[in-house]
Amino acid sequence: MGSQKFFIETFGCQMNVNDSEKAAGLLQARGLTASETPESADVIFVNTCAVRERAAEKLYHAVGRYRALKKEKPELRIAVGGCVAQLQGAEIIDRAPAIDVLVGTHNLNRLPELLDLNRETGERQSSIDTKADAFTIPAESVAHSSRVRAYVTIVEGCNHVCSFCVVPRTRGREVCRSPHDILSEIRGLLDRGYHEVMLLGQTVNAYQYGDVDFPALLRLIHDADERLWRLRFTTSHPAHVDERFARCFSDLPRLAPYLHLPVQSGADRILSDMRRGYTGAEYLKKLVLLRAHRPDIALTADVIVGYPGETEADFEATVRLVEDARYDGLFVFLYSPRPGTTAVRLADDVPELEKKRRFKVLNELQQRFQRERNQKMLGQTEKVLIEEVLEGEAKGRTAHFRLVHIPLDERDRVQVGDLVAVSVAAAYPNSLRATLPPR
Ligand code: SAM
Image (tube, rainbow, N blue to C red; front, side):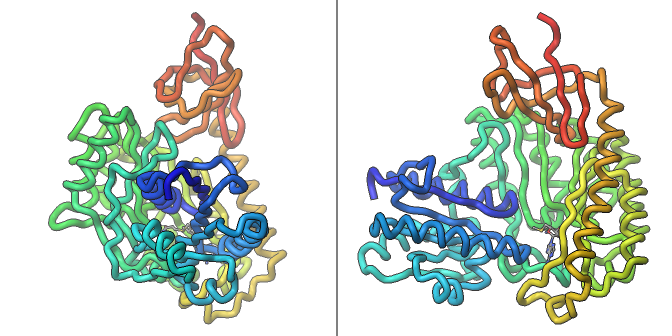
């Protein structure tokens, strides 16, 4: 497949981004090079997300666009992977004849081989076996998309049974990577100049390998190498937030003071229907525990509005929880029924307009909190790890994962990967503007 080009379109979470980085690495190992645009590609890989209905529909829109390119260029190959491929394998093949290759979430390593087979035989190829080993792709062949933050997947799948969530169906049950493999991947990344690592898993803090649990793994990684400036992880489940977990935030100085901890609802009745395993009060106690260990920790969450049967009183309970939690960020989703989940059997009875109203109420409330909180940062000094340098501006994140824009003039020598101390000059709900110290 030498001298050919590939283009990857990724939908969904960081795990999908990391899978796309693996796909890019596998294709590069076969001699293909990355293309900036789908028009100049010989292979297009669409990496899909099935978490919400709209996310799944994006696959068909994307394939529709690429089918038009195939008319001009019949040798173009279209491959589809990710959660929709896993969930709707045969259906996708029927619905979108332009697709040549389909790979499930555990079969990404077979992408190059299936593309070869498709070329040789002219037959469409598919591999969607969740029993296959999800960790077969060697760490050194991952083509990381960021030069600053490297994703390292440590848990695949999820053993929770949240009623709304399709992930256990698309990614199977939890499988954890060995601490040895994780540490050796991280050492390799530090050798290549990375200083920030984000550990990934659908329920990352459920990690357990032999007697190494998640807090033990964090300590191992943290203490292994001082070149690691910032250690992050996502996504965590409240069930695995306890004293040992919280203590990591006070004991490990290079563990970034940031935690994304989805709550989903503030109403106990809805939380119980969702099978989340906690009440609103129990969840809030976990935030108190985390703040006791790390008072400045930045906390963010996901909330679903319009879950089946969610009444106005249930929604008000969510509003109260969001008021109490004082999150640094909130991701609000409109409930959408997903195939194979238990909630799909319930009537999706909150009208779309009402879901949108609830979405807006929560977002406006949260934006107000963020504006107020960011205003308090005016004049503070923050350390920003630079991720992008454009003309006249650099962008990066603080340890608390706050996005910072830094205006530059032509004499400023700021580079991607630098850790710079800046002074916060302006505050917005979703970002800060900060200036470099005077020369
Ligand atoms: N595994 C993680 C967890 O349970 O915390 C999060 C994974 S999911 C990719 C990200 C978010 O999408 C969830 O936290 C939830 O708020 C939202 N989500 C999942 N299923 C949904 C559904 N059927 N409808 C609307 N939002 C959904």
